[in-house]
Length: 348
Image 1 (cartoon, rainbow, N blue to C red):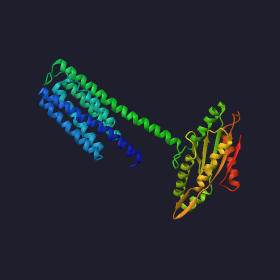
Image 2: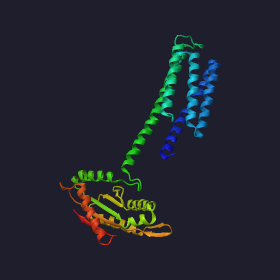
Image 3: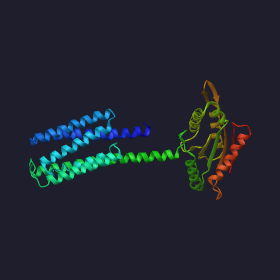
Image 4: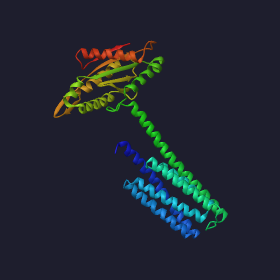
């Protein structure tokens, strides 16, 4: 089972347990209520649903979510029907049919099973309505009591449905946020991907430079990275990429932005006031990487990085993110050409 599926099941486990525990508490209260009414038929029917709710919790702990929801929804629907026959339509028990339909939607059943379940509950509800509407209840309760019970059932079902809807809307929002983050994140390193980096750089050029603030851009490239992949494999290469991204982040401040531009290249966007500060950051990165040791297949490996640095001091109408990338790439190329493991910096 995938991680996402596991999370979905965990969420369903939490939500369904809330339903079952809520039902347990409610049926304890109703048990005393039916004893007070001296309605033993309703009491024993209520006790059955109480037992099923307890059993559903046990089934959930055994990861039998679908079966737990099936027996709970089926039993509750049957007992609701029985209690409507006893107390009539005015008790507000009819609302539980809607609640059961809502629970079916939120189960982990297959879509076809959900449709069948909702149709069966709807047929149950229509049949009971047709049969009971013109019948005199077995237990005729005082008007004030029947109205109070009706309001209790209405409020309880509104709360239950609202809570379930809120819970799954929250899940949907979290899933959407997760997808947005994934769309902007590099899978291997966990930092921003190229698309997110370019959006950030565009935003900085458009909004930060006009305010008089400079922008520092650093591009780093791992030296001889292809040799690592060829010698130790791509998994080892991914380990190097992930560790180096962490080391680069440790050299930056919270306001700075880092991402994987592509392959073994990283791009950093820094808010600094001068080229000297930016170059100091890049040198700290270079030294930190050079000190790091990697062990693969019994070998101890040192890795170095070359850096290109560009400080954009003022807003030029012709400055674009593409031109900034071209400038910093030229500086990186100079570092590579002049021996690697070095920093080349300019101010524009």
